[in-house]
Amino acid sequence: MEKVAIVTGATGQDGSYLCELLISKGYTVIGTMRRTISEESERLKFLTKIMDNQKFILEDCDIQDASTIHNLIRKYNPIEIYNLAAQSHVGNSFTSPMTTIQINTVGPLNFLEAIKSINPRIRFYQASTSEMFGDNVICPQNENSEFSPVSPYACAKLASHHLVGTYRKAYGIYACSGILFNHESPRRGENFVTRKITKAAARIKLGLQSELRLGNIDAYRDWGYAKDYVVAMWMMLQQDEPDDYLVATGKTTSVRDFMNIVFTEAGLNVDDHLVIDPKFYRPCEVPKLWGDPAKAKRILGWIPKTTFRELAVKMYKSDYKLEKQNV
Ligand code: NAP
Ligand code: G4F
Image (cartoon, rainbow, N blue to C red):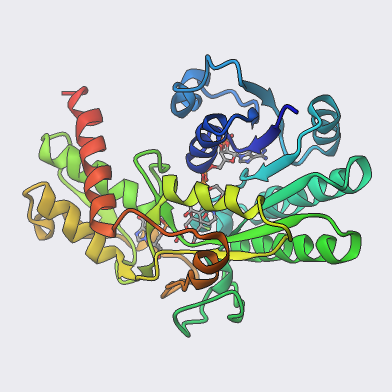
């Protein structure tokens, strides 16, 4: 039987890696993107490896639109749906709280409702987040740690996290939340701190810019590699019973640590270039995220493969190569 999966947010970091993974596992993948006026080739750049693959189909879908979701499910009859689409920037959620709630809470609810009414056997993955732990700094955090969200983004994600649990209990739907800690890659959006740092270091090295302007560099995050993390998403939907899993490396490091590794790799002195700019401070900060992935290891057999240093160097080298084309 043909295995069909829908992946929302296919043009994003995780969506692009997950589509590649599922195609390699023999799925026909319906990757969705929302139509915007921005340059299409730019938005599809992470999908170039699979764009011409017969097993990959690109569809328009704004996840705020319930009728589009219903039509998509009826058209393709998927066995699995991975909902990765989101307004994923925490800082931006303070300036666009309504949009964030619409996309990050109503979007997943649209899928749960569609699955309930069209085919309750469809397996559903929701992209939950370590941001839900917020200012709870009792570490390391695990699946039973208290949620204490401190941004509209985290509040929206926490609501959808609870909706997943509720639809699982109430209607017996196979729905899972992956509580993923920060994961990065050369495909990371340029307005997230790691990519901002690796891109700036590459440009400074090449003489294309001189400053790196950042906000709070003393925040701690548990940082892993996105390509390792999408494997855990798939594993969650292959179990006998649906459940929620935390996915992390089990180590925590600061923004400052990430910056130091990257600038040392580039042969630069960070103090010559760093400017702390209050513009990048958030109204509330999440001071420390540090996850314990023991359950994912025990039940899914998932382990992270890429170290923090390898990740930082990989991202720097990729940005250096990209930026060199501009010289
Ligand atoms: P990302 O690169 O920002 O990708 C998000 C995708 O969602 C983009 O392709 C975006 O498309 C799409 N999107 C936004 N609004 C949409 C809408 N209304 N309808 C349809 N698509 C929409 O994020 P990511 O890092 O891959 O993260 C994937 C998911 O995991 C997100 O839900 C994020 O919140 C969650 N998460 C991420 C991390 C992490 O560290 N990366 C950790 C925990 C959880 P456009 O090009 O149209 O904007
Ligand atoms: O890279 P960030 O914007 O990621 P953040 O806020 O941790 O959120 C990411 O991870 C979450 C999982 O925990 C996801 F759910 C979410 O979708 C996203 O992928 O910021 C990391 C840290 C923050 O403490 C921030 O205040 O870096 C600090 N930071 C300092 N200067 C900055 C900057 N962040 C950004 N984006 N830009 C700065 O200039």
